Image (cartoon, rainbow, N blue to C red; front, side, top):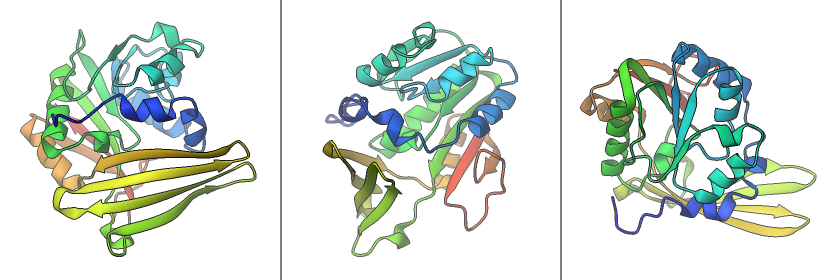
Length: 243
């Protein structure tokens, strides 16, 4: 792991408003899909955060555990109904181990890119494989890199526009290391908040190789949680790797 990587940094800056930044994302489609893929077995979520997916999965009767690098995000999870019943280990999910084996390990909402290097991402795949029982699945949700959307390696885009909040994102690419440095700017009547984050992006084919190095093979790839086919025009992917 790179010496300056701090797994708690992102949550420290955003935990108090994180849920409002993802409230536009659907809940039922991913929960339905994960429940089906888990086949009734226990689920471990890397980067469990505030429990956006973990809590509804637990409410359906699945045994759910998590790993997260941010004490602030875990505290927000604990404050929610049922959050205190989900065991969470605090630490870097590319390295930390928890007891037991699982039917499914989940890494959602592009969190794979929070890891700072290819080596760290390979370690994450290997850690997922180490937690899976035979036939278990590692499910990764990520966007597809689109370097063509940048001009002079920079981009500015509108993420949300509402009556009470506007969110824009400034981004700069460092292609040699496949790094994207971003700052989201959230404007509300309460003022301006800045949320910086770094992303070490990887293409789906690169993730497939990481999986093979970890003893897993690609079982499914969809464009979204509904199971829409993955095509040349897909801007995101749900990839399912199986032991």
